[in-house]
Length: 490
Image (cartoon, rainbow, N blue to C red):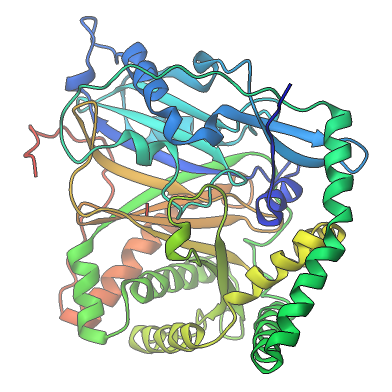
């Protein structure tokens, strides 16, 4: 009988190695929708229709029907089809006490994110949350980082949301899970794969001999990019109250800005939207640490900024195709204009450098030498060469719908690593910029103050650029009711 499985790439597997009791490696976030198109006669949300719709779309993302298995002896993970897939397990239905406000929703979201995904099942969950005031409901998505990288666009929300308000969908096509291999078959295939490795090396050597000058230049370029990334992580980052051993429990908060105002800053100062984001985060961290009685004047506060390295032929592929920049955020700079200039200059240099190619080169090495990956991941977790992760995922600037219910807001979440008490993720959608802040429960008990710092930091930057210091449209203390909508990556 034929069987099917797929080895995890080195980068996808790294997120399984990173995951420990206190570092859950799922990402996702929370989205808010109009309630009315999916309202049941009793005022709830039509969860069975949502389940049926999700089921009808899973064939576009086969990884959501697959679970982990392991090659015996070496314990290397592979994907196999899950022959016991249960949609009622993965698509869950809950509620906040009516009328639920924003604070209750944030607490529930943090509680859900504090639990790891079950590795015996496909690594995703959807929580449909009703009971919110303002005629809305929420949907929280958790997907393991080994499945999706946040910028690939191949995740559940990307295949569920539509640019039109149609609520029609076809029934799910018939799906039959492919047989999984036995342990003996996995071991046999692995031995065959390893036996073929010398031949692959020989093929590369022949390519080198055909054009040695070109091959040597490529090798030097790859080694240069690898060293540039390693060298960027050799210095220890600043010691701050946000960088301590973390626990398993999370806080989640959010904030939103008008994208037009963000672009107004970019247009006035030059640079990019990402430069505006990083400057806003820098100003907020400066305010936050100062209030925590941390001397910021001499801090080397370092951030990792994920960078999409997908080639054109890899768009839509599952898994992780991401590298990163590592840069120092000038939290020691009191002048907002100078903070922006320094960040814009740093990101420009990083674009011209080969640092972002470093992770890609290292993972290529790890594909051949698995111990390199395991050792490197454990060393990175112990050394923790950065203070903060800031990831920015661009989305469509037009409305999207779920079975006729308009997507109103979307706040992403990035996982926390060892000694990283805070993660900042940003999603742009429909002319707004949505910040999701994931934090350790104990280290960042004052996360709401950091949200206020984000707002104050951006208003300072906006005023410096345009003279406009009005409060940017941001989070509401309560979930406001909206009128009917007007119809109009990742």
